[in-house]
Image (cartoon, rainbow, N blue to C red; front, top):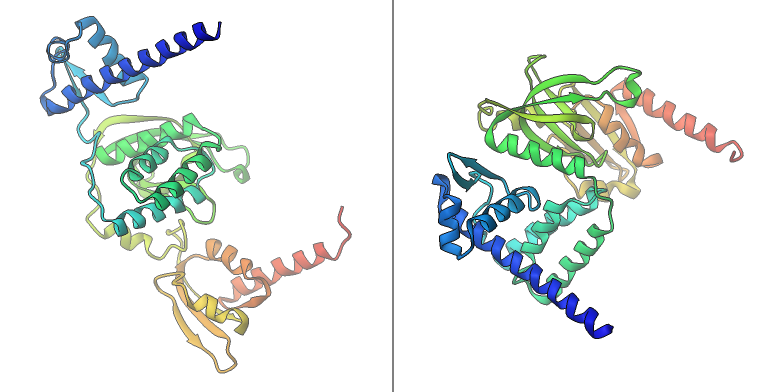
Length: 340
């Protein structure tokens, strides 16, 4: 019985290899013909397969493998821009890309197949030590939950951004906004930006209904679709200039100068990093550090200030100082009570 099982298992594995080889052959022919496309009959002639098998493999590439194909007038092809040219990286460049991707794995809380695939391609040709590190990272990622609907939204937003197409979706309000119903939005996607504070991904784009630039949390985007309407992106540098005052994601609040004094015990640690592009540091005679920056509102920086606990004091603005003081007072009152 064991021999029969091994034989059947081997046949199934061989069949999978044959199918994978066929799919790769079909994909190579499609890619070689570029934007003009190719007919299934021509693919069959090039690959030695029957037209019926070619049709079946084209459907498998499109539906199972999620390869963005197009078909028109009997010809098939790969959507322009679906594959980027291969990168030839030095070891130092590969390490830089790997570290950036590694930060992404620490940021995301779900399995992202595109990120995993990028890691797999990156590890090819790396030295053994770095190769093993990449493999450990892939193992970590594989343990996380898979959110297919979220991954599909990110893929569609990426495609819309790359092709300059307006997207239409329902946007669910935040939980603290009461019982408001989701609203339909039509948005020109300008940027996808991860948040360090909330570990979430945000779409930044022009909301056509409101006539203004808006930020949308991708997790709250529902029923997303790409429209055929196209748009021109803002002038180079314009969007970056508008987003620069943000502490994290929020950029459309009034510019506010924040002045802080850090205790001598943490002054060196604070001074080692650039927390905001506008920051100005001054080391005071007692060893404390005065830190000032102009940021868009105080909602996001408030959380960062609270994370330093007793080692920081807000000097300005007065409203932020009062807010932080009240938060510490509430926390002290809570810890003054017996648990439960």
